[in-house]
Amino acid sequence: MNKKIWIAALLVTVMAVAAGCGSKPTAAPNQTQGAGTENNVTEVEGETITEPVTAEPEENTTPTESTEGSSEGTTTTTTTPPSETSTDTPTTSETNEKKTITVFYTDEEELELHKASAEISYASDDAKYKAAFESLQQSKDNKLVPLWSKEIELKSVQFKDGALTLDIHMPDTARLGAGGEVFAMDALKQTFFQFDEVKSLDLLVDGQQTESLMGHVDLEHPMTRSE
Image (cartoon, rainbow, N blue to C red; front, side):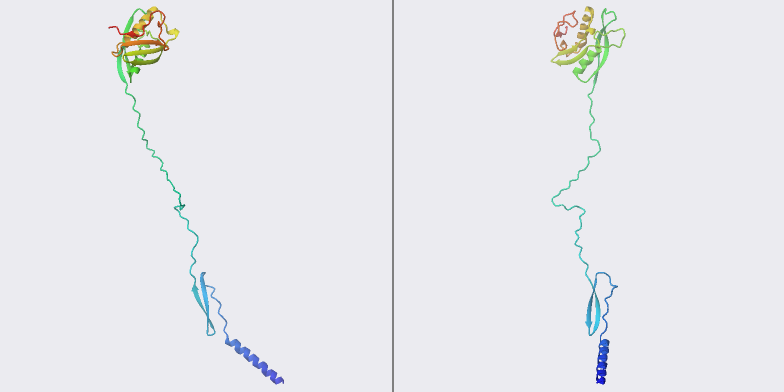
């Protein structure tokens, strides 16, 4: 009985040893292979063969941003700054004409009328008449006294069809006596009637026709050239 048991145990041991020798351990996958590489494991006649398989790189699905802008329907307008080069055309000033005229003054005693020369500069007829009036208000000779004070304001000048109209403002301090008023009116007429185009002269005070300029001599409206 014991002999049979020992024989059975021996057979079991021999079979176990034979089974262990007949199978080989499976080789572990190569861990040194780089990322993206896959291994195929194949058993051939009891042996395990590992074949490296290189995985294809994954496509990058992240959209690439366009550096030129891709907004559909959007128009980008680039404004070019204006050139800094000045294109302004210099303004051409009016050409002033110069003319020497005769003006009239009196002496310190207001005994008689004296004439003198004055140079005026003007760019138009109205400016010429204004400059002539201003010449009557000033003198370069201390012995020649203006009959038209600088206090008198020439408000406007109008010339049309040979008729010259002067509108003045005269303060009381600019008024003269009877003899001075006569000389003042003669100086005014002789100064302006030297211009050939002036056929008549009308003198207004603050836009109104007055009977007398300073209250001593009648004032004609208009005064005409003496032939």
